[in-house]
Length: 329
Image (cartoon, one colour):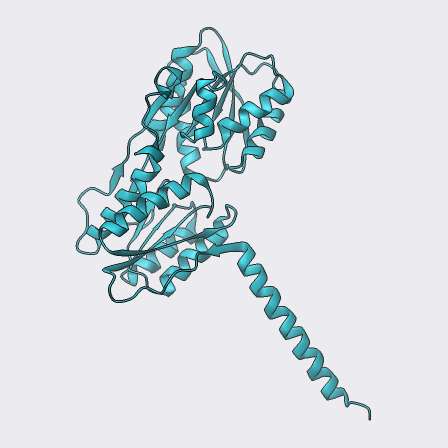
């Protein structure tokens, strides 16, 4: 008995629906990751969300670690979410999701552009304060920023080059992401610092996409295009490690002064070996801890000071062995 065209269409339509539904769920899982947690009960004081730039980025895991310590101290339920890979579009979708489920507060990286500004406004209008960490967007209605003074950090990077080199210097910059506000601020701080001398010149810049292999490829490209480079400066956490790899690949015997960012164990090891000359140390655990403390205050009242800067220092070989690493505090 032949099936009618209507039944065949219904079967085909149903099959397509099931395939599309499965595909949508697989795509959603692969695009961003939300850690499975027990649904918060009424025993918790507040429910906060920490939305990271990239879920398994070592730097963001340190921010999470500090935030969890403060959350445990104050009986706060903390939800940690983020894209599997750095993606502003997915980051904004996750913030919107946290607004929709009506958490008590959101801690996240600032994202340049109208979408973020509008999303923050939507959150605040619904009584959910947003606090930025790591990267600020001052034009938004965010209630406060907790983190590094990125312009000052860039100035410190510039000062390491000024103080530890002589004569004409040609600088290659490796930056995590061109569209990252904190990277832009660090670059501006670096430029201002080197303006005090006329002998240091930026000749090129490449993006690493905040990955070690990306930083190695960026370094390779910079040195191939600008063989005059005598200084390499990395503006995000994995750039220093990648710069060493890239230099070893294209010019292992070339004498290049290197300034990196952050104090990952691999970076400190390379400083002790003399392969990286200096790094600008941030305190991500401190950012996470302080962000929870500030968010608790925001549940009760507005803040008089809405920029809370955490520590930033220069680490070199001379102080690397005694430097108190973030994960040893």
